[in-house]
Image 1 (spheres, rainbow, N blue to C red):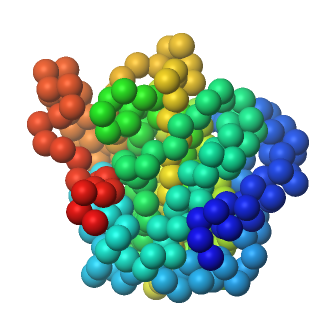
Image 2: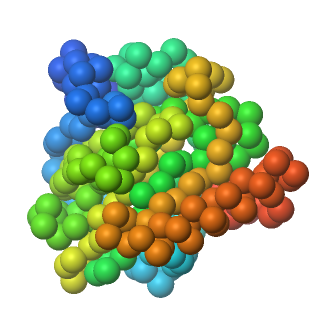
Image 3: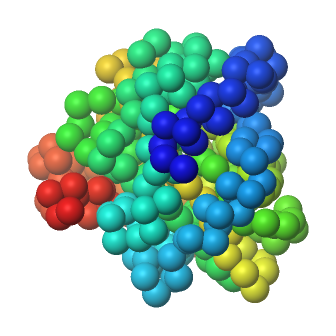
Length: 273
């Protein structure tokens, strides 16, 4: 299947559940609007996506106090079906209806896959609470939506690797969205959309296809530029302190160097085709 055919299937599911998803997004009981949709694609296709994922040693390991996960954005290095799936979410019809569901005018997909693409997390890997970088790679557009499509069969909630939303801060209980097989989760991104991925507690890999949508305007008038800003989990007070200092230092640097000291490597460099 090519990206247009996959987009047709995604579009049909979104259209069939549009009003329900719109209500869910608008009425999210949190400061972070979200919705999720199960059975996004026929199971056979979702399984195929899982089966063509690269092995961990073929991906980039990002390991630090902030996170521990495998990522990939240079999609021409991997099975071509993965690229077709990723860009199906960037079909203009899919982007348009997601924007309508989330009441966002003219959302813009990111062909460069800045911080998007595919990711994989295994036993004890994690993504600490954080705010996504507020902008695209050129700092021209505002990041407004995060789309996460989970493709690991039989992944149970107790295995970890679940999306967590912290609308009321780290001192209050998080909202957990199970990274269930064939589930699409969509969340708003703004100055207070603190989220994380719970540590994996299973000898297997949770696989995810990721896209971000951007806009010429931020979701909130109060939004301001910020780098990806990490915190420690509530039980890790020391890590939280270190990560807050880390964010302060990186923000200070960005006030001097608008696009950073070095280019973020997590983009699809199509000149390398």
